[in-house]
Length: 225
Image (cartoon, one colour):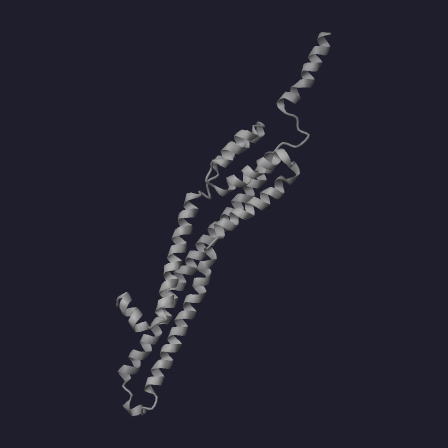
């Protein structure tokens, strides 16, 4: 049976179900390509950033973090930018920017959950309306004159919308679960990256290499005198 025949036999309720299926495919493809382009699980850049932070080369660390496609890089970049102006606000800035990046990843994913819930209801609605129309057409006829083949035909046509709604809902739910799991996985990766950066950041009292050498130079001068 072709799609055109399904729409014809299923009635008008098949139209919103097909629209839901088109939206579900579009959302999944868009988010899948977006997740793949952003390299959510690739943290190779973080080792270079941490090495630069430990050597007190903050500019180089920002450059490394800002040039990665991973959203965690923008969070780290924001943390390092805040470090110069407000060291006490580094963690707060990490939470703020991290929340914004997670919202970007979760954008439109909830649409798949809505489709997974709405499609079966649309199918059930189409079936109920189809059954009502069938029995209305049989109203006033005697049971002896009812054609069993005609009755069966009306019932399976009415059930088409329920089947179509379930066929859309199950893949939409699977797609939603997959994308949601990828987002949850990235949330853990982001938390780990933030903690590692905070641990590597120098404390306010920690001297630079130049400052650490000054007492030694002074002692050498004093000994020479």
